[in-house]
Image: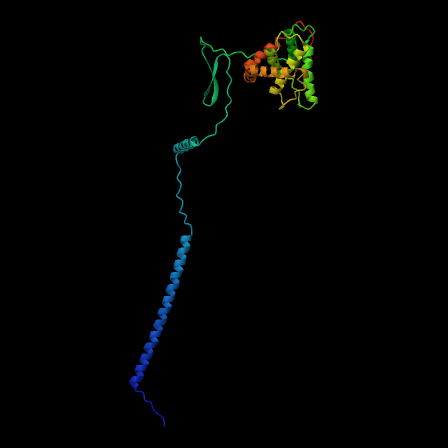
Length: 295
C-alpha cells in the first residue's frame, strides 16, 4: 500500500512565494557581491594611478620672462661682478714670487702703483749713505805659488841659495805623491788652499831659520795641517810630510801651530773680509824685480 501526500493550495502558494523570495535574495546577494567587487577593483585602480602620478616629477610651468631695461641689466651685472671679486678676495691665495727691483740711479725709488712698477724722483738729501766698495782680487794658482815662494825667500834671508822655485817644488812633489799613491782623487793646490798655507807659514816660519832642512820640515808641517783641515779626504799619511830624523819636532810644531792658529784658521773660512785681507797680503809678496813668467 502506498502513502498519498496531499498538498494544500495555500501551502503550495506559500512555498512558491518563499521560493521566489529566496531567489530574489540570492539575486540581491549576487548583485551586492558583484558591486563590491567592482568597487574594490576601481579603488585599487585609483590608488595605483595616484601613486604613479605622485612618482612622476612635477615641473611647474615656467614663468613668462619679461625683458628688463638696459640700465637695470647693467646694474645687475655690476653687482654680480662685485660679489665675484669679494668671493675671490676671501679665498686664500698662494704667495706670488715678485722680483726685487734693483736700486735705480739718480736717487730714484721704485713704487708700486695700481699693480705697476714706477719710479719716483727723490730729492737729494744732505746725508747720503755710501755703501762700501767691493774689492775684487784675481790671481791664478801659479801666481799665488810664486808669491808664496817669494815670501819664503824674503823671510829666510839667511838662506842665500834658496829660491822660490824650490819651495814650489816641495809643495808640488807632496801633492803629486798623494795623487800617485791614491790618497786623494784630485789635486790640493788651488788658490784658496794656497792662501791657507800662507796663513800658517806667515805665523810659523821665523826669520832666524838658517838650515834648508829645518825650513823644509817646518814648511811640510804647515802643509800637513793644511791638508788635514782643507783637504778633500778624511786622513792623509805622514810619510810624505814628515822627515824621519825630525819626528818629534814635527808633532811639537804641529801642536804649537794648532794651539796658536786654530781661531784664525776658522776665521779664514767664515769671514770673507779676513780672507780677502790675507789674499791681498799674499799677492803683495810678489817680487816685482823678478821678470820670470808665472807657471
